[in-house]
Amino acid sequence: MRKLILILLTLGAFNVLLGVDFSFDGENRTRAAIYNDDNDSPGNHVDNKLLLGMNSDLTDELKLRVNLQFGDVVWGGNNGGGIAAGIPVRAYELYIDYRIDAIKSNLKIGQQYWADHRSLMIDDSFSGIMLSHDDLLGFETDLGWIMQYEGNRYKGNDVSTFLLSMQTEKPIPLGLQAFFTLDNDAGENYLTLLPYLNLDFAPLSVDLTGIVDFTSMDDDSDLDFGAAVKGTVTLEPVEFAVDVLYYSTEEQELNYSISPYYMNGLYIFGIGEHFDGCIGNDAIDWYWGQTMNKDMYLGSVASVKAKLNDKFSLFGAAGLILDTGSEVNGGLEISLIPESLDLAIYGAYGAHKDYDFKNYLFGTTLKASF
Image 1 (cartoon, rainbow, N blue to C red):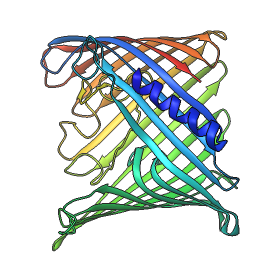
Image 2: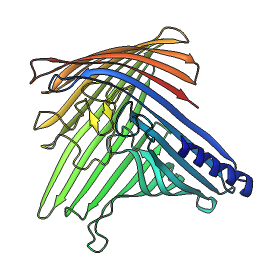
Image 3: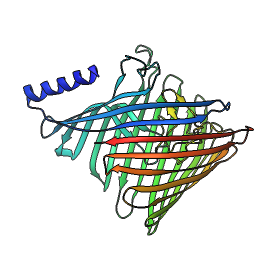
């Protein structure tokens, strides 16, 4: 709490002395869950965190963005959740945004957030530089440098990724995202291409994403392929969706994914909307890079969501991860205060092919947004 007060006092001083105005955005999330792990040991926890984003127009051309996370702490835990314990604070975004009208571009320098189309390569904050052009040959274009790892400064064993993203909405939504990683620490190079296309045949929409993954190491190389396909049928007030992810490689995941957050809608064998299985450095889910199949990953999830009225919505999903397991889940979403306070209650039941017991998860998540 003292850290939050100190930060707000500092911002207040900027406001008074320099005439700098800040706008705020953020989310406060509290969740509780009971579950068992891959040894059938029962567990439970309550955790919470606050994301606090601060934005300021320093000049007409220069903006400042700061995004702080207070928590994520497990109640009663050692990392700020105990009696009289201080809550950890991390800055996930800290960058300047410089508008260059002469070339119709924005230049961001510092820690910033970026995600690819399906969160297969990255959906996270990073340290680096991003140049965003409004219209390059009809495409919104991002050109970025991600500094992943600073090794020994005198040995040149850093890990850097260069990304190119081009996307447009006309005549149809489509794009290409490319990532080239120089891993000087391991002596390997990686090139990943993610072309995508959105097709709309109301009430059906289809999102198609291809995966091309090339790895170069010493005198050897490897080429792998995959695809992510999501089809959605919207018949108000009900929405049906099928999400399929396929990837063929001995590593069962993208050869060099940076920080993915692919949401397949499962709560035990993946990442769901209201619970991602991650608690600090622990996890109760089997993510898509941790399957038992040694030749490929193939996951398929069918989901449904029905809006009952302005306050209540039902949701559910059933999924199969080839050679790993299956899951069914469902829950209720409640809008306590429209666009400000939401509550979700959910449960999941999973069967792993190698275990003689079943996995379960029951939880609730409360989110306050501002």
